[in-house]
Image 1: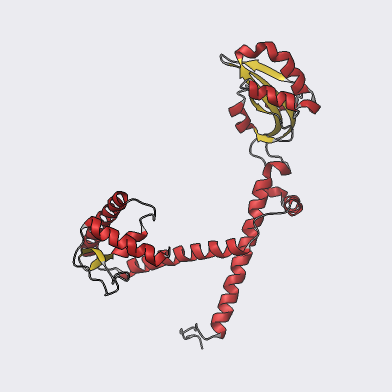
Image 2 (image 1 turned 180 degrees about the vertical axis):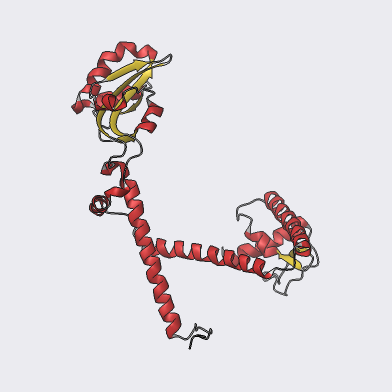
Length: 296
């Protein structure tokens, strides 16, 4: 079904549903003339604009309800706009410039986003990200501790399995092995068993509410930490850590590195576009400076 056919069907359905009258059609009733759904002061609302707001698969009753709401809102807005135009100060030139500037900004934003999406590869090779990180380490200073850690926490009734959990968490070869993973799933254990995964300490404490008194000493310990509260037993092991004010490990900031690289490429692409369009416009005589240099 073509967009035009859908529009015609929508228009006919809404004309019938809303009881709109005084709308003329050509001899070919599949090709309606301009039909208006509402009028307010010197403005009219095309029925097509109402149709564009209604999903193609909407039922007649839903279409009617959505159309009525849109028309009512449009009339309400026109009444308020008329009031504003009548009572605002007469100095509307600046106001119109603000509207034009907003429209231009909106157009440019959407055009640039589409232009970039169509031309910019979104995947950043790991080697490019690492090279950027090494060349700009001053951008990646930690404001929180970063840690590699594994943890498990279980309900209190799992105390009989403590020896198994302790052994598994201290055995580097079994951390990602199937038995421990399977046990965690079967016993409702919250867990993170990837020893290569980095956490900001603030985020980790949300998962494992450990009390830290001598933070750096505790983070430096590679022993298994075990504690419990009124509901759960917690097991936590730190594998590596990075200190506040130090350079964040690459793995911690890789996503941010890639964002910075893509942002830089985006800016380069848009600057190139602007320069090419300017050159073309000057060459075609589409632009000129009309101001006279008064210093000559």
